[in-house]
Image (tube, rainbow, N blue to C red; front, side, top):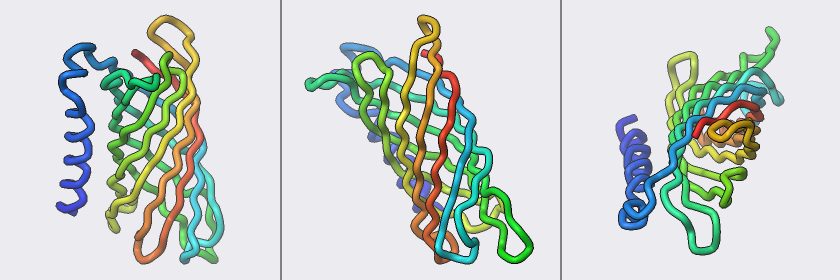
Length: 179
């Protein structure tokens, strides 16, 4: 577990220290985003087919600098809860997960489109079987007021080794972003 935590801390630290001189010229624009939606998960392991349930997500993002080709470099730290869905007595309940992810990516000039990817610390809600994975996100936002936007998000995650099985997660949500 310590090794996984070190990887996440190093990723966040390096994402937040990219091009300090460029950041000094234009301060980062921070955002806070929260969404709720539906999550689905699948594995070829003991849990049977795909399952869907509630998924929630909170993201603290920062636009670090402008990029020469347009848009900007963004970094984020997110916390998610991803349900496992319905089950029956004939197969084990699909696991529910908490994810903490550090991500880096691109945001278009107006901030309406954002794509990020990065490592994730994955904790089953049952408390055992901690592991690491990777989580991506694609956000589309539309301004409602000068500092408030409605946002739709798509968040795929891959957990390569959860108790010997590879688990895929996908969440779709809608929420609000404050800048």
